[in-house]
Each structure stands twice: as C-alpha cells, then as structure tokens.
Length: 278
Image 1 (cartoon, helix red, strand yellow):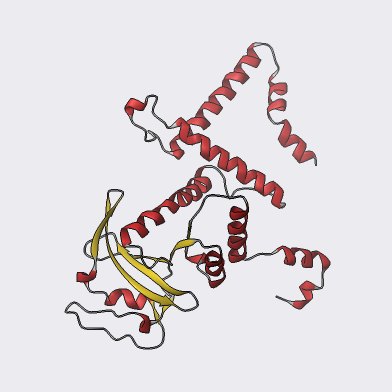
Image 2 (cartoon, rainbow, N blue to C red):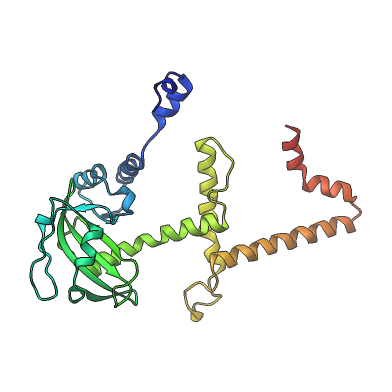
C-alpha cells in the first residue's frame, strides 16, 4: 500500500472499510450465531481455510469441512503412509505438499464409496496441517483407474468416515449452481452500481428470481415426480419470450386504439431518454 494514498481522507475511509475474505467469513459466522441460525457444520472452499476462521469455529464449537488446495503442506511425521505391500513410505522434510502425497497413495488403499447414487474411489488419513492441528483428509477420484483430477477434502472431525464427509460436503454444491446460474442467466455480476446498498438490492433481486424460477419448472402434478422438468436457463428463456410477447401485444393493442407510433415509442423508451438527458 503506497503511503501517499493513505494521506487522502477519502481513500482512508475506503481503506478502513476494507475486509479480507477471512474477515468477512468470520463476520458471517458471528452474525449467523447471533441470529440463532441452526448450524453445526461449516462448509467452505479452500480460500477460507485459514487459521483465523478455524480458530473462530473451534471457539464457537462448530465443526467444519473444506476443500484443500493441492499446494497446502502437511506434516509427514504426523502419519504413516504405506506402499502396496505394506512397507512405510518415507516423506522427506518437515512438511510435504498434498500434491506430492497423492501420487504415492497405492491403488489398493482406495475404497469405493457411493453417495447420491454416484460412485467415487476414496482414501482417508488423519494428518496434521501446520497452524491448524490434527485433521481428517479425504482424497477422492471419480474413476476407478484413479485418473483425472482428484478432490481433496479436510475436516476437523478425525472420527468421521469418508462417506459422511463427502455426503456433507455435497450440501455446498447448490452455492456453486447459484453462482453459475446467477452469472449466466440472471446478471449477478452485471451491474453498474457503486454503493454497497444498491449492489445489495441488486443481489437480493437476483436471489428472489433464482428462488422463483424453479417453481416454473415443477411438474403440474406430484404424480409426475418432484424434480424440475426444465432448467433455470430454459425457464429464463421462456420468461423472456413471454415478456416480449406481452410487450408486442400491448403495443399492437395501443396502436389499434389509435395511439400514435411516436407516442408509443416515447413511452417505451422514456427511462432511457431521461437518463440520456442527465
């Protein structure tokens, strides 16, 4: 941070308002507890796996599950990894990255796990992470050949098994679909606003739309099932088509009643004209 910038009062105000992701995560946890939100397990991605947030969760007596970056270090002296014939493997150094550990895991150490009708092949181990303490590690592959990208989960509950950890971690997936659908179809990141209050209102509208659109995809009868029969994208396209249809029919009706074309377009584009006049 350039010291000259902090000399400006306006910049000082903005700088004092700045919070890191970890700070905001801690604030959200505190707010959830203050509002008595019923939660016992925190689910977050690897960006939030920091000592400050983990300490806060421990203080609040909350368990947690997180994704683990492949470059995060482990303490090799805290666990024993064996090869395919049962001989201990020696990992050099006081610390070893996860990406160096995964290739050393023998195929015979993986176990098939089925969660939500989807199989995966997992390996679990209790390890110590620098600054975080003893954790339960779960390495998971989609393929029985242990090829492709692996997913590594970590939790403070060393007594939990892999199926339970994977099942609970999947509860976070709807957040990812919210981001994807919100940005792709609902303009979550397409706003031209500067103030936090206005941005918050925009996000609230996006979340309301995201909550209502699945209702359009429900089957007309429970006898036909409970799963949506159309995606968020399909619902958005149908709603846009219905809106355009209503607009065209409304314009046609006004013209039939004798309204001039100039007046019709003036009313349709009144907001753009006001903004241009400013």
